[in-house]
Length: 197
Ligand code: GRF
Image 1 (cartoon, rainbow, N blue to C red):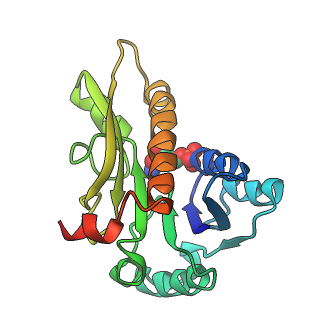
Image 2 (image 1 turned 135 degrees about the horizontal axis):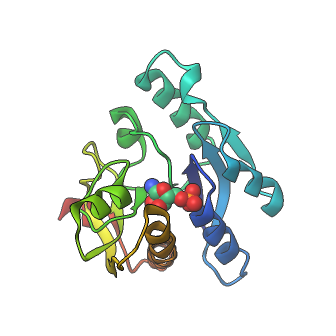
C-alpha cells in the first residue's frame, strides 16, 4: 500500500477524490494523513473519512524556513511514500524539497510551463488563450517548473469566468492525480527516474 500525506490550503476537492478512490479496497494507496498551512475547510474531510489531520499554520512561525521545518516534522512522522500538494497555496522552502522530492508532487490548474504561480486560471483567462490545461508535476525549487508527470489540455470557452474554468479543470487534475498514484503504486511510474531525466 502506497502511503500518501496530502497537504491543502482550501476546500480539498482534489483530496476528496483521492479519499474516495482510496475507499476502494482494490486501490493501492491510502491517505494516511491530511495537513494544512491554515485552518483549511478541507481538514473537515479528515473526520468524514476517518483520516488524521494536522495543521502547521504558516502565520505561527517567524519565517518560511521555520514553517518548513515544522511541516517536515509533521509530515515525516507518517512515513509517506508520496507527499501530495493538492491546493497548498504556499511555496515550500528548499528544506521541504530536500526532504521529500521527487516524492513530492503538485497539481496545477494550467498547462505548465504556461501560467505558473498562484493564479494559473486567472492568468490564462487574462492572456486570452483558447486553451489551458491541468498539470501534475514533481516539486523542485522552482515555481511550478519541476518535471511534468502528466498534463492535459482543456479549452477556454466563451464567457468562462475564473470559477467556471477552474471547475472544469479540477476534475482533470483529479483524474491525472489518481492515475499517477496508481502508476506509482503499480511501479509503472518511477518519480526518481522522471526527476533524473
Ligand atoms: C486546485 O486547482 C489546485 O491545483 C490549485 O488549487 C486548487 C485546489 O482546489 N493549486 P481544492 O482545494 O482541491 O478544491
